[in-house]
Length: 379
Image (cartoon, rainbow, N blue to C red; front, side):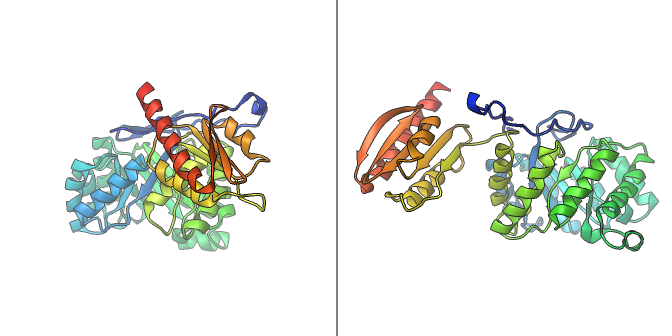
């Protein structure tokens, strides 16, 4: 399996004093398959399929699409025996490690481990009693499979809701720790924890409290964040705060959308914080009354062309003569538009001047193809 390597941003000299995120919290390390988590490993990106797990072909197609978009770990819902039986074929063909998401039925957890999943997401307290927890832990230990304790604000025990007056951050943390203790009592410590709420501030507070309490790896995310735009905003704010404070070992951006869209947001969050980078960074101006080229069309075309490209470099698509030339010069390749013309830059040097709005897009795309070909030839 190939996973994208971490790539830290290098700040130009004029940004050398810019504060970086806080040092990462030093958590224990564990492995989901061959993907290292915690203990100094890079923040890992994961998602969850929304296919019917019983449909092997559809599920594998979506897993492959997620892996191509940069997903390093994929979770699947295992609802019944038929779904658990499908896991063997899925695990045999997956390009990335899989985590089985299981509730209430310990048999499904054991069967999932036997099928070859590399992680479990359960809550031991709802799996069906001490003997059944024993069975799941024994299977996970024998296979070297970690267990994620996942607590959402909507799944906090009723006694804790009464104690705290609702699904508060403290209630979520205590709930998770109760589940953790069930595993620790059995000598099992390959544990990862998540504490998700649809409230950004509630999520942040819960993870802050947990990070002060344990050193287990933390999977971070804002759950039920919403549709593509709203969910991206909430996830970026919540995850951005936590990652900037050094909290978080794996993350998921939860969107009511194609899961592949979650990858785009997740990697941009990591890039914005200088933690990891995957694919080109596209700098484009917001347009204003000075814009005299078809900038939105040009920026969209560049973004579409570069979708799926994994190499890390910068592209600037600028629309006027005020900030455009400066931004374009800073990029590996860039274009700055003026009145009925444009300049194309590579590494700070003008390589082409284009006359006519209609000619600018094809000319820049031609130069972009040359840039990509030369970059790959030199790799």
